[in-house]
Image 1 (tube, rainbow over the protein chains, first blue to last red):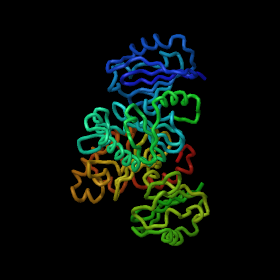
Image 2 (cartoon, one colour):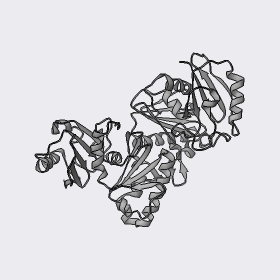
Image 3 (tube, helix red, strand yellow):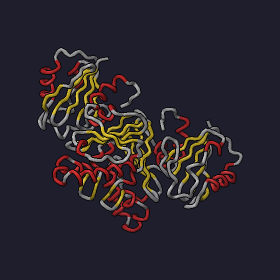
Image 4 (cartoon, rainbow over the protein chains, first blue to last red):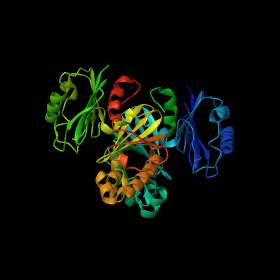
Length: 221
Length: 221
């Protein structure tokens, strides 16, 4: 089965199809709308031949739907019918959850994505559970995301930011009881040392995750 | 199928078997050991006829096993072989998770138990995921549990404690994206007003949950 995978992010849309060597991308941004997506797809994927689609989306996805408009893109997404657009079956999934699927190796895995913000997902025995752990509290006036965001790394420096990451990992390990923890996202490369038992993965795992959701019937969304 | 359900708590062990009208209990406590359990069972359940057992235990249970000794009971539990003891198949589950199963109605449900401490579980499409959300942060120096514990209700008064509960519910709703939230535990009765969309359940749900785990093959631990 040939799967088209889209990873819609706040800065770019990355695209890849089963069997391709390279991924393709085009810019998104804070006003990025379904019309912009349509235009980008027409420009870049015309002639691509696929049977199914996975869309990783930077917002909570509940029961395959978007309950709210994304905070980092434009509007119109809640009512956008991806299946109608593609004319193929579509799995819509949170972007961090899609990347988590790409690097899942069994058991209870916590996935954290360090990017502009903090993405998260838990996979328990192949059951993919999108979470918004970013909203948990770090202190009375700050969230986990506000302490680990890209802007904070730049503000407080890599060392302090890394210490915070280690503390957040400890916190979430105790609360969510994972067997393994994986960190990804564009900012993960700034970690000098990883907490014990944490592994780091490449962002390309997101595209593999999108394909894997169709090829491996063991996964449950 | 007749199921024996044990709900081992920090103060009591509650027991019940399918078909019984009333539950039976005997005291536990901070030194309660497997030998004490054995003695209690001999005294109270001799002659009870059951085919399977569910044990709700006040500690994290990972993959059907106890990774650590409980904090509110005595020791010897990690190596205790429940199946050998009963001579019947046993499902071992965190106590809050067992109660969550008893009141599950579908979708993604967050269960919070207000007792001596704060118990929690998430059930997603009948998949039961024990959590220790008690350890999450409320502030730099306090956990969710430390702000909602029984001793805190007594210290700050019911009104302030109830406000905190509402804030914690908001926090966890945003982070874990449940469709429904249920609160149980011995302290839940002190809540005058429940947050929107939260329902309260009786502690007996724990025993029903233990039975349901065997009777309803849809549940996954």
